Every structure is written in structure tokens, then in C-alpha cells.
Length: 484
Image (cartoon, rainbow, N blue to C red):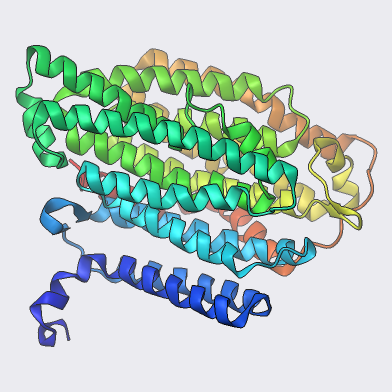
């Protein structure tokens, strides 16, 4: 079939999923504009189908490494793995949002469109092969996220969250661009392969200048994955943004951020791995410890999940700090399981709704085991998994990154990671204690269908992962090897 197509069209095959998503997003935007708010439900449903179709296209693309636009756009097994993960996260979030938006009288067609364009930015970011493509993808993703954070225009908390995220995001973009300009200045190229060649020969002042550029680049990327010390926006934005938007922030953008972190480190700076390993070891330790200790005093479950996500990014970066194929494989397994655990937990948070409206305090879960036993059981399993308790999926996520750290000789990093997991387990178990041992609070409204689907699938994946881990682990192994 492809043999009959003109060469110009077949040459654009690697970027076909992104073209389909961009065109589909614009068509849905036109549909929303002309049909008005009454088309919101239809637009949301079509957006989910579009994301599934784009995911199928990503999987369908030929299996070799495909390069486009002079190396600016790269499609390999690593890009495919991360793209499917980001698309799945985005589709699940739209599905989870349907009833929430209707109940809040916030059915806006723009919501799904913004998620589509943000996801388009993520796909471009994951395939970025140079600094320009990296920045374009990052900004396309981020601009939509700023608007999403403030989508409840009448809510003071939501607009404040959007403004905080925008101001701090602009600062991080500036740092990232400054790092890019330094890297370009000292290597004379923006492509990752060119930077890798120049960095391999770098000595003296060029070496120091390049390391300065690397530090600023990593600072900008740390902000996107909310790693310490650039995490300050996370708790306020997670608490202030509408809950489905918070679920989106916690899932897909993290996947894209970690993906470009890995690609930039492994593709552009393999010759100075010892330099960026030091940065990542510090960031991983600081994120794990802050995530473990800062969450202990939280009463709002969305703020608690913000600190939890900071900690989890620290654990994921352990694998990258190892700078080995096994380490990257560990990160990919971690991100796959993290997305499932996070979406499941946020499905439960979205189901915390009473006749007077949604509730977010941990105390509102009191006695859930008696008012809704199945929800309490699945949520407890997800929380145990987030804590890393065997034989649940979260245990294997941590096992792979700790194993990679030990194989790379980073014993102290692995030990600190295990200790941070123990501290973090306290606040997850505290929620389980509230659900099972406290006197029942008022019952929640029945869980809507979309939430039930996401909650059930992620809950079962999390419990049964140990029975059949091979598909995820094998896909992660192939994806990691494609980078080295």
C-alpha cells in the first residue's frame, strides 16, 4: 500500500500520528465553536476516540528508527513506548472528567481540546532530536496546561493555580532557554548527536561552559517533572486546579518530562555522564526525602498526592542516574506503573462527592470500608502500591530502579530510596487506617461509569501485575535498548 504513495508523503510517515492529532484537534475545535456548549459531550467522546486512533498509529508505524527534518524528529522504540503511555493517560483523564464537569456545570468543549493540544506537545517533546524541537514541544505542552489549571474562571483557587503555574513556568522556560543557548554557544550545534560529538571532545573552558548549560537545561526540565528544588508550584497548583486537571498534571506531562530528560541526558551528553549523574543523584535524593516528609502533615488529599508525585519523580530519576540501559528500563517500567497507580487514585478522589459537592479532605474518607467496601479495597490496594508494598505493581516499579542503581554502584542512593519509601508508607497507611478504622462519615454519591472503568482497570492492573509482568517489562527493555 505504501509503495503506491508519493515519496513526499511516505517521508512524512514518522510524524503521521502528530499530524492526525493536530488536524483532529483543530476540527474538533471548529465543531465546538460552531455547535456551542451543547456539543461538549460529543467533542469529549470524539477526543477520546481520536487519542485511541493516534495511539494505534504510533504502534502501527514501522519498527525501525525513523528520523525526520534533519534529525530534529526521532521515532524509535523509546518514543513509541512513551507516546502510548502519554496518550493512554490523556484518554483516561478525559473519560474520568465527563461526569465531574457535568456535575460542576463546567461542560466546556475547550477542556478536551486543550488536553489534545497539550498531548500533541508531549508527542513532539518525546521525539525531539534537537534543542529547538525540545523547546517547541515543551511550550506547546505547557501553554495548554497553564490554561487548563485556570479553566474554572469563577473559582479563585483555580485562577490562582493557573497564574502561579504560568509565572513559575515562564521562569523555568527562561532558565531552560539560557541553558540551550549556552550549550549551542559552546558546541556550535543544537542537534543532540552534534552536541554528543562536541561534548565527547570538550576540554577546559568549553567543558565548563557546557556543564553550566547542562545545569540550566536540567533545571528547566526538573520544573516540568516537579523535582526538587523546582517543585514549589506543585502543591498549590494540584490543590487549586479542578481535580480532573490535577489528575492530568500528575500523569501524562510527567511521562513526557521524564522522556525528554532521558533522551537529552543519554543522546546529547553520553560523554559527560559523570557530570549529569551528580546532578541527578542530588535531585533524586532531595525529591524522595521532601516527598516523604512534607506529605506527612497534609490534610487535603490533592496536596498529599502532589508531594507523593514529587517523591515518585525522585524514585524514577534513580534509574536515569544509573546511566545504563537497565536504569532506563527501570524508569520506563516505573513510569508505566506510576501512571496506572496515579490515575486509579485520582479516580477515587473524583468519586469523593456528596450531594453538596466534591470533598477533598482525608477525613472525608472515614469509615469508607463500611459505606463502600469495594472502593475502599481498591483504593487501599492503590495506596499500598504507591507505598511500594509487595506483591503489588508499585513494589516492582521501585525494585527495577533500585536494582539498576545497585548494579551501577550507587549503593547510597538505593539505601536512601528504600528509607524514603519506608517514611512515605506512613502517610499512605494513614489513609488506609482512616478508611478502615475510623467511624463512618457521610456516604459518597454512587461512582459514575467512566470513573468506575478507570478505577477498576487500574486497580486490577495494580493487583495482578505480578502474575503477568512480561508485556510491560519486555516493551520497556526494547525501548531502553533503542537509546544505547
